[in-house]
Image (cartoon, rainbow, N blue to C red; front, side, top):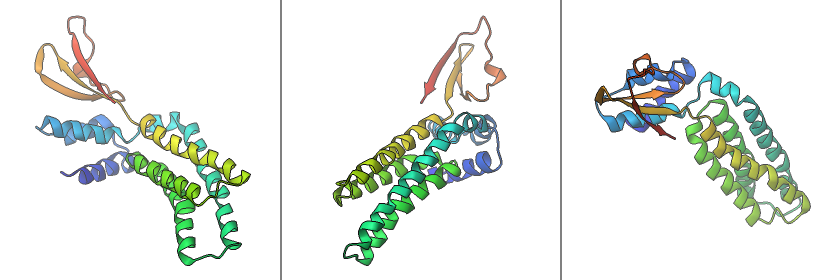
Length: 204
């Protein structure tokens, strides 16, 4: 399976069908340890409903920042109205000031946080475009830079905070048997026992 196929299958099962992370991993697990880790990493990029609920306040603030950003960027159109505007200027301004923030909101709503790094890059390009076009020379432009920077930071932070951690566990009794276990769904097979010391390695 390609990474795209893995993500599509995981998205359909977790986000749409609300399937348990551990159950889905067990269903997709193969005989290839490297592929298993790749599958687990892709699954971990999709939050559980509990994780989404815990970060609800963070998401609301994120949506608010992006909405304020788009509101402030209306200033671009005011500048275009009083200058010699070319069609391409309008197209680029619309894309950088409205399409990209709207795309960021869409990604968050759809829980496609694996795209957040791309979103952060696009928001960064949007900020760079505004700086190079000297839109931040006025006091209002400098103020609008705050939600822009905040949106970039929150985009990257969300990608990390919405990830579900998992462990690679090896039992001393069966050292060749290694199992990936998601923290949100403990497996009874590896429950704590006094005589069983376990080797755990977290993947961030």
